[in-house]
Every structure is written in structure tokens, then in C-alpha cells.
Length: 419
Ligand SMILES: [Zn+2]
Image 1 (cartoon, rainbow, N blue to C red):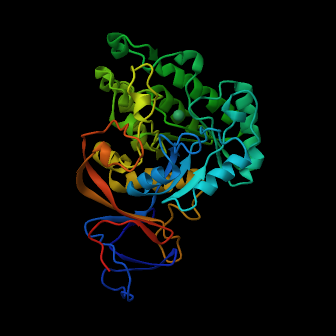
Image 2: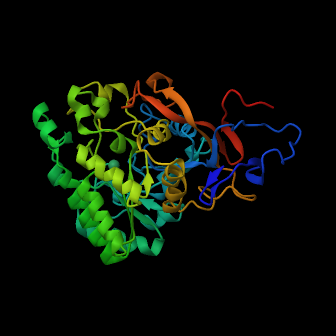
Image 3: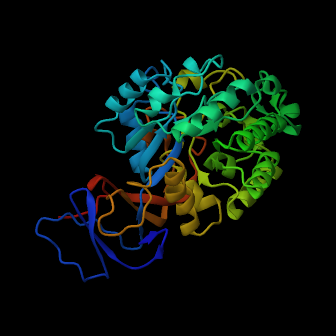
């Protein structure tokens, strides 16, 4: 078993929706009728928490529903996800937030809706953050776009403080990205594709950090991907700015040359970056400058991807493959991977009451059982998502969730479990 207090060999007994006992192997009694989940060779841990996924409901049900997305999450070892608000309509009001919460009843993981910063996610005026906060929204973001207007962002940050909320930004300056569709650099020149320069991200990160410093707001930077961005985060943390940052499995594992075959499954915003950017990101992850691995799970139906590279919708699946990619590609010990995928994101999202906490008697039974040695191949048609746009198709990964327990209910159980 592994949690933020360390690793130990133990059996865990769950009763109702809580952990009731944790004991040395063999010392637990086995209540009659108890379901036994075999964790031999595995790590029992608090469930994974994703700060950033697109479940597409309402409005994008041809790509994903909360049901299919939450199943993908549970299969990936997640017990909680933060659902991005760029739905149709956008989660810009208490009414839409309540609708998402209603749709999430019966989901296979906790779904925590984020709300938009600007009304309708249009970037013109502030949304009613207070009424969404009253529904439990803790993270506000216009993800998909940055909040381009700095005065609006400043007001959002000032306002967020009184709500105890986190302002999260998709940092790419739209004036600099233009109609770019991949990282700007040697590869984009070679391919003849318009580029999105890394500096578009760095400029917006620097602006947001300055505003966070000036307002004292809690800032979370979504999917940082450039050397410049992580250098800025490192410097801001050193002077005490209240900032956290996430990186995605795809930015940590893949680089811009993947785009060379014009395969639209590699199209994403911010784009896959250069080797130097990825190296800086990995270093920042190892140093704790990056606080979380978040999937940016972004399902799209085939027709949105089966077009030219520039016309294709940006985004990739991530929930079912994230742990496998992290454990295969990052060279980090599993306790670090879990910190980045469970308790640190739980703290950022304000979910520590039920998610990411130590596995002790009385704790909410939101758990995953991860098999770090399990080899598997990513087969798009076998994924639970309604969409198929994974950049890891055909990849062999080492590490996979075996069981997932949500509020005491085994929502994912490997075949070998027995009564
Ligand atoms: Zn984004």
C-alpha cells in the first residue's frame, strides 16, 4: 500500500463507503461474503484525481458522455475528475453546473465541474463566479482559450480570492498562436504547417503570474509545455506566488516530430513541443516545479479528426492511458507518480476530504489498485471512451490499474477477483 505517508505491506478492509481496517497481511479477518480484490504485486493507493478532462456533456455527446468518460476514468484508476466547462452550453451558470452534477449521479467516478471565468466563455465579461461557487465549483477556467483580456483576468483573480477559488488558465496568447496548428519551429517549416510558437505560452504564463502576484489569487496553469513556461513557474514559486502547474502525459512523452506523418491524433493545443521543451518539462516534474499530471482528456468523433491536419479538432484521449504512460515514460518512482496523479491534484482541487488522503481507518474508500508491472498494448477500439483519438494507439505500456473502488463500491474489478 502506498499513500502520502509512505509504503507498507498491508491488507485493507472496506465497509460501506469507508476504509474500516488496515492491517498487516493475514491479520485481517475476512467477513463472510466479502469481495476480495487481489492486489498481489500491486500498489493499493488513494484513487487518482484528474484536474483536467473534457467529458463533453452537455452538447458534445457524439464525442463523449459523462457515463463513457467516467468509465474511462475508472478504468484508468481515477476516482475523481474535474470536468472542463467548455461544453454546449458552457458551464457558465449555476443552472448548467447543477445539470452537470445531475448527469454525474451514477458516474463511475466523482465528477467535479469547473466553471468558466467569462460569461459563455466568450472572453467579454465575467461569469457569475459566486453562484457557481455556491454549487461547489472550486476551479474556474475558460480552457480551450486563454482569457485574453488582462483587465478581465485581473478582476477574475481579485474576485476568486473571496470565493476561495482557483483560477486556471489555458496559457496561449491568441494573437501569437493565430491559426497555427502545431509547434512553430524547424518541423513546422519542413511540413509547411503554420506554427503556434512556444512564446505564445510563455507570454501568457508570465502575464498570469504577474497578475497572481499582484492580486494574491490562487493560480493554476493548465498543461504547461515549454521550457520558458516552466522557468517562469519556477521563478514565481521561488518568490512565493500562489501558483501550481500541471503537465499532460502527451507533452511529457511525445514531441513535435510525431506530427511528421500529418496524423491528426497528434494534434493538440498547446501543441507537442520540441525535444528541449520536453526535457525541461521532465526536469520540472522531477523537481516539483510541476505539481500534477493531468490528462486533458479531449475526445473527438472520427469526423472531427478525419480531415486535414490544420482543420482537425485539437485534443487527445488520456484518462485510460495516463497511468500507463506516466509509469512507462517518466522514469519516476511510483510514489512520485502517485503524488503527481493523486494527492497533489486532490489538494489543488480542494478535494482532500474524500480524495487523495492517507489510506487509514475512517478515510473515504476511494482507492485504486495499480499493477506497475502489467504490460499492455493500447488498442483504440478497446477503450471505454466513445471516441478513439489516442496518440498512443499500438503503444506497449507497462503499468495499469487493476481495480478501482469508488466510495466503497468496486467499480472496476479485474477478472481474478473472487467472493
Ligand atoms: Zn486547454
